[in-house]
Image 1 (cartoon, rainbow, N blue to C red):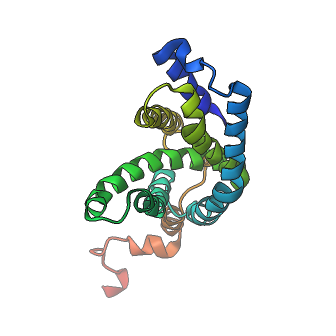
Image 2: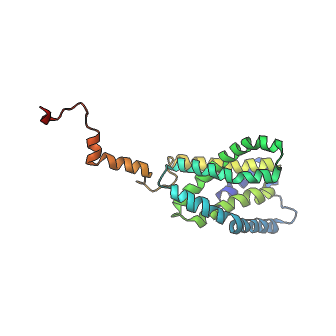
Image 3: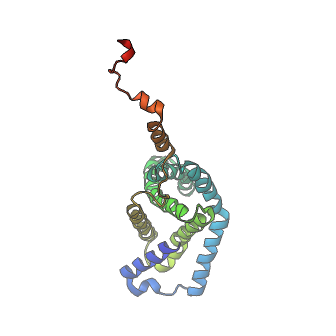
Length: 220
């Protein structure tokens, strides 16, 4: 569950050496307490409600309608739209911000696609637990927004890129390792595939595929 912050810290160690573990100004106990507090606040006030909507409702109801990758794609698309007001809240509503919005949206969508792939996989692997997905989500935000300041001695952009790279690599490994099924139970199939398969095994479906050139013996 906390693989992303741990992996990002290890990458920072590989890049910056022991500088990544230099004690923050208030000491490590205080820094870790701040990370824990940020995590709890995000979970209680934001991620739990967000994942009830995106995972418990949207993802759950589309789970058997689309393949896991399509499901991830569609949910990530709406998730990116959901996050766009943050861009304008931080940058303002000027012409420059409006022009840059499509680029911001594209970057947001790509990054959220990989994050959502992990959430779909985690949801399937935990027996459809929205709470655990929300905890997983909160650990991402706490790591990127708070922990990264303590373990990555670089600019905010570099911090974001390191932690985002870990998410992308982790998600790519999951997609490849599960052959795109993202933890979906073996034998499960989207509803439209099940309907097609059922049609193939019905007498009506078979009759509908008979050779139209065959003549009825009674015609003679």
